[in-house]
Length: 463
Image 1 (cartoon, rainbow, N blue to C red):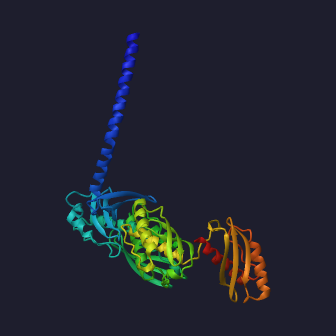
Image 2 (cartoon, rainbow, N blue to C red):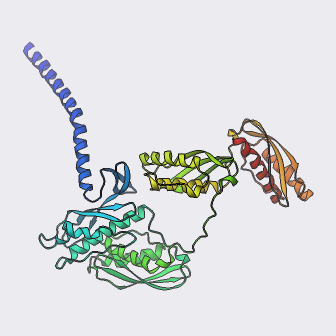
Image 3 (cartoon, helix red, strand yellow):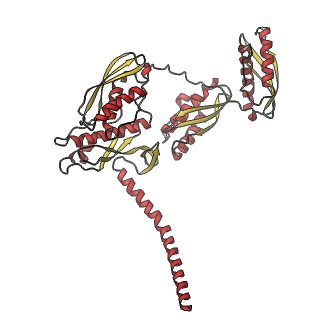
């Protein structure tokens, strides 16, 4: 009995020691294994773009890699699949610059005929894609005897360019309501070559898409020709789902419609906005939104005496490290700026920096945001334009609440209506901890003037 007990204890001790040793070994080797995997991934991706570090991104179900060189964002690598002659898809990775220009293509796997169908995948042949991109379009010379494989490679690169173009917001949506009624023709690259279409616009809507010619594979492409034009017309947008197994054909149809209406991209051209003159911006806090690399950039800007004195940035959808770079450099530049048009956005995180500058401009084109809780106790004077002339007020605030409003002058307003507005706005503002009050008083023009004068008075208390 004692021997059995000693044996159990011995085995338990051995198991405990072995478990401990395995944990120690795992702690030592796990970082090494992870680093080795990271390096192998970097080496594979680095064959299609000149980068030394990569970050995997999953955005709305689309996975891709951001590439960095010496810490600076230089482009992307996207994995795509396309249909060739074989039963399995052609799987490839495509390297692209931040301007959506191809830097390299590598086929990872395929089931094309060895020695014949795989000739389009030779490195020197795939190098034809380098330098082509969203702006120039993608072309690829078909290899004799390997047409399907060649078109499969072309479709895959086109898919990568389209994906990245959409992610970066560089492929504009068409507003059919802005297209004059008429019939337009265009062509887009499908799986088997160009797809030509005729598009009809009537009463601001796309009402018909006719397929004029194509070289797509019969049977496989039929669902795309049946569903894609129908979906575009029903949904009045090109951003419709692709048909499984016929992605290249669907994209070709959409590209052809886009090409037919290319002259109307963006509709009517907006008048350029006037530049912001900081010396003319009223003191106060402003909020605005711009477009970063992957999402909105929100800013809070404080202006005092014609200078930006404080800047807070939120860009949660952009990569944290690059947001930090952009925020640091753009804050420094904006706090020193006297002319926003001269602010340099080249920071190593340029797209986020552009979003910050855009958000600041948008903020300063609006009105100051006034939080009464931030205004020190005291009495402030302000002036604004009423219905007929200037309205001057004196506002007293205590602990974030307006406790008293005195009217210094509403002399140019009609007395009857001025009295209505003065009484109503005094009742609505005194005792209020917000300026979000109704100005419909029966003397709205004067009431708006009073509210704006109060706002102008309180902005001086923000500094």
